[in-house]
Image 1 (cartoon, rainbow, N blue to C red):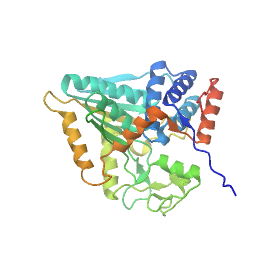
Image 2 (cartoon, one colour):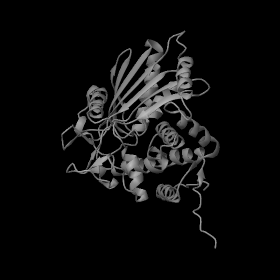
Image 3 (cartoon, rainbow, N blue to C red):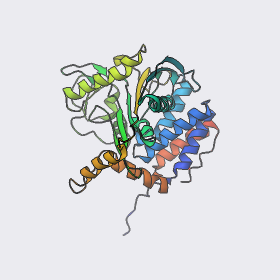
Image 4 (tube, rainbow, N blue to C red):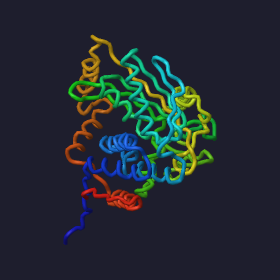
Length: 350
C-alpha cells in the first residue's frame, strides 16, 4: 500500500518576491524609493527565517492599511530636529519599513561625521524586524542598534492591564567575510507573529507565554490581541520594555506612546509607532570586524553546536539567496490574490 505524501513547499526566488513587492506597493501609490526600501526589508525577513515579517504577511498588511487609510502611501516626512549627532523625524503615518530605512541611513551618515548618529522617528506604522535596520548599519561597517515600540501587550508585575509593548530591538556588528553578530528579539517570551503562526496551523501555545484578558493562563493563540503577553524574565522583561519605551516613544516626542500606540490590525487607524536608530562608526585602529569575529569564534569553540546570535540566520540568508525560500500553498495563494486585486501579475514561479 502506498502512503500519501505532503508535497514539499515551493521555493520562491528572492528576486521574484522583491519584484512582486515593489510592483504591488507602487500600484497603491508608494513612491519607488519607499517601495524598494520596503521590499528590501520584507525579503530580508523571509531570507533570515522571519516569515511573520516577510512578504506573505507584511506586504498584505501594508496594502490593507494603505487602502483603509491607517498608513499613508506617499507621506510627508518632516525633519523636526537636526543636530550634529541626532535628528528627529515625523513620519506622517508612513509605513515603518520605509521610514525606518531612511532613519538608519541618516544615522549612518551622521556617524561618518561625529562617530555617532541617532535618529528618532514619531508617527510611523509597524516597522517589523528590527534586525534588518541594525544589519543595514553593520553592512556599512558600523555597529547598529534599532528599537521600536508598539501596541501595549504587557502588564506590570501584579498588574492586569496592558501598559507597554514588547519593544522589538536588535543590535548588529560586522565580523569577517560577511559574518555578523545579529541579536534580534523582543521583550516577551513569544512574539505576536509566532503566535499568529500557531493560530494559522491550528496549534495550541506552550505554557507560560500568554494570559487572557482576565489574567488567567491560556494556550489559545487567537487571544493575544486582547490578552497579556508574558515578558522575558518576569519583572526584568517588563523593566526592559519601559526602558526601551523611553528610547522610542518618550524620546521621539510624539502624542502617542506607551499604552496609546495602536494595533497594526486596526487598519483604518494611525498607530503612532516610534523608532530609535543608532549607528556607531569605529575609529581607525579599532579593528571592529576582527574583534567581533573573535567573539563569534570563541562562542563557536565553546561546545558542539554553540553559536552566537544571528549566525544561523546569516547562514539561512545565504542559502535563500541561492535557492529561494519555502512558501506554503496558502501563502502563495494569498500573494496571488493580493496581486490580482492590484492589477499586477504574481509570477512567483511556484
